[in-house]
Image (tube, rainbow, N blue to C red; front, side, top):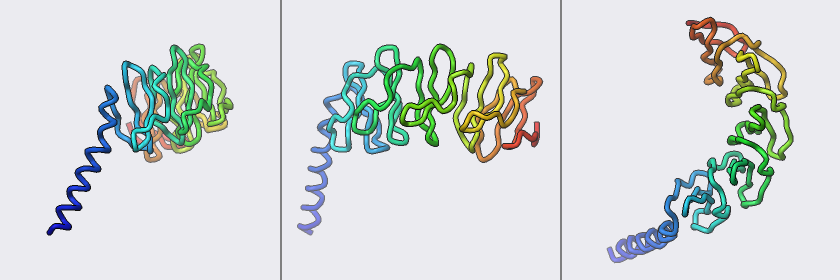
Length: 193
């Protein structure tokens, strides 16, 4: 019985001690990737599981880490840091989003495209809008406000015939054509209204 109380006392003390660092911040997000987003005086950074600051409190906005990188805004520009806090991709974009299947959507001068984790442009920044990469395809909108799908190399796979196209989920996507919502497969075949 004494052993049980000793174990409980040690666990309570460890838990209480582990949480004291959270009081140093105005906000602490869940630690889902080994790093948790923290906010202090409207600046964002990331801490490890022990509360050690890994990404300094410099940033105005930030996404959670995905595939080892976080998209962050510094002033008016977005870039990426790695899990050590080092700048991996310079802060040159008007918008940036989390990595997904090795690609991250970025926007500059009103045009969207995709980069890899070394910052190389894989899909040129030429689209009015772009969705999320899934099931090998990305919904993108051209300058004529028509949506279609490209693959990860930028090749058109499903033509620009929709007034809206969503990302694929479970191999199917919702699209709007002629003011009607449709479900299509990855080949662009209509399944149902």
